[in-house]
Image (cartoon, rainbow, N blue to C red; front, side, top):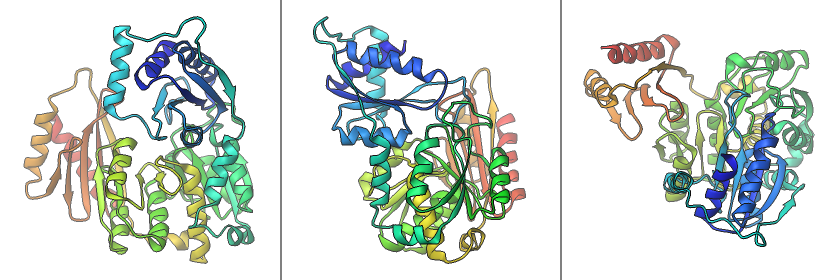
Length: 427
C-alpha cells in the first residue's frame, strides 16, 4: 500500500527527485523501503536521509530543489502507528487539493509507472542535520557567542525520536551543557509520545537532579517543543510560541498567525507589539498559507510548533530551542522569572468519541445560541470568544471524535466552558 501510494505521489507531482526520511519507529525502515521503491517505480529519483526530523526533511527538499518529499512518521501518535507526511517542492506540506488528487490516483489505479529501464535512482544525504543546525545558528535573531558564554544547563527529552541526535548537537553548538534522556533514536517511546505536561515526569526529574536552567521535550518527529522551567514545572506548549513570538517581534515587526485552538497568550503578545494576530483552521498548511499571504513575521500552533519564515515555512522544534535560549539570555534571569512577563491562562482539552458522528451543524448552532452575543468563528467547527476566555468545538480530522477546547484565566473557568459544551452536545 505504501509503495503504491508513493507511486501515486510521483504521478501527481511529477517525476523528478524526492527526499525521503523517517522518524525512529520500528516500522519506519520497512515503510521507508516500500516508499522508496514506489517512487522509483514511478520514475522518480530518491534522496534518502535515513532518520531525520520532519523539519530537517522539509529543509532538505528546499536544499535539493526536489520535486517533493515524504516524511515517514505518525508524529505524536503511539509507536504502533505510522504514516506519511507529504511535502511539496516548496518544503511545505501538500495542500488539501493535491492530497485529494493523490488519493484519487491511488484509488483509481491511474499510476504512471516507469519502464523497466527508466526507474529512478537512489542516493543518500548524510549532511541534512548539519545544514539544519547551521540554518538555525545563522539566524539574525541569535547572539550565538553570548548564548555560548552563558553555558546554559539543559535537560533534554528526545523521546527516542528523530530529534534525539540533532537536538543535542544543536545545543552543544550553542555551548550548552546537555543532560539527555531518551536520546538514543531507538523508537522505543518510554513515555506517551505527545509532549504534554503529564507526560514529562522524567524530564522534570532530570531538571531537578541536574539543576538545569531549562528542560526541552520533543515529539517523535521533532516539530513540537515543550518546556520545563528551572523549578521542574512544565510550562505548557502554548507558551513555546508565545516566548518565541515575543522575542522575534522585538526585532522584526509583522503579523502573527496561529490556529483557532491556540492560547490567547499569543494574541496578547501580538497586541503588546502593536501587530495583528490572525487565526486559521487547524493544520500546519493552513497556518503557513496565511503566513505567506499576510507576510507574517512568525507563526505556529499552540502545540509547541514554531514557524519562522527566516528558516523555513514549517514547524521546527530546533528553531524553538534556539529562540527560547535567546529569550532566556536577554531576560537575564531564570526561566520562571521570564514567565512572569506573560499572562497566565489555563487550557482544558477533552474529546467525545462517537460510533456514528452526530449532526455537527446542530451542535454548532446550539453553542452559538447558548453563547449569544459572543464573537464566533465557523471556519473550523465553532469557536466563541468571551473576553479573556474562549471555547472551540470541532470535529477531529484523524479520529471519530469531537474535540472540546476551553481556555480561561483559571482552571475552573476553562472546565466550565468545556462541560457546558458537553452538556449542549448531549442535549
